[in-house]
Length: 257
Image (cartoon, rainbow, N blue to C red; front, top):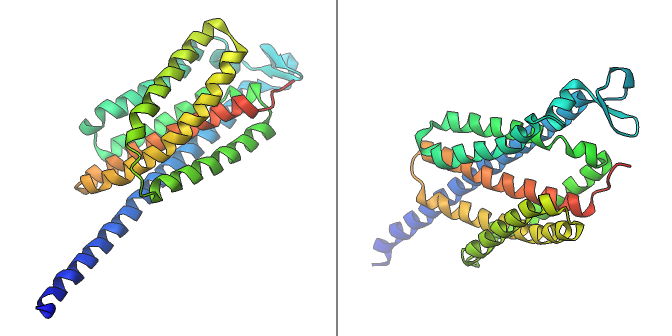
């Protein structure tokens, strides 16, 4: 009887090993997509800012700081109505991916994600006008360390984090509404509170989304479905990181004089 049971046990162990290897490959793909997306965003943001500003007052359109002037390109993306198009464009890409990915090929979904990352970089390039480069770099590394720790927790913990999902989502809706209201109120106190609460929410969402992505692997079948799932997982973690970074930058970033 023991001899009869032995192949079953071995098969079960082998199957678990295959699943574990597949999960590691899947999560690595998610993090790779996310990482490349962040690199694209950072490069586009930096070079857009470089093209948008100049130290040559004679060829400038407007002054935005001590010795820093806007070029015509900078005036177009930072002071004209085009600014609102750039602010809202990333949201449009997120909607397209969220509601249309099932109708896309995996290749089209991946290209859409790269395009989203590039547009996000163009939209975020204005932070270089407000904060010093050293401050941006410092907050980026703090955000990366925090994100890494919470994502590792979400991946390794045995605790079920699904119960926090609805709570975190409600908090996210709350800070979005508060942020919209503060556009008109321009309250520094409310802005500070939004940033504090926002950091807590996106720290929680990082762990929650990592666990959710991990669990989704066992429910996905087929190479195409897994590739699309990895793209959507990367999008979720990318948004968690970017929002955590922006909240921390508002809290601790050093503004240009």
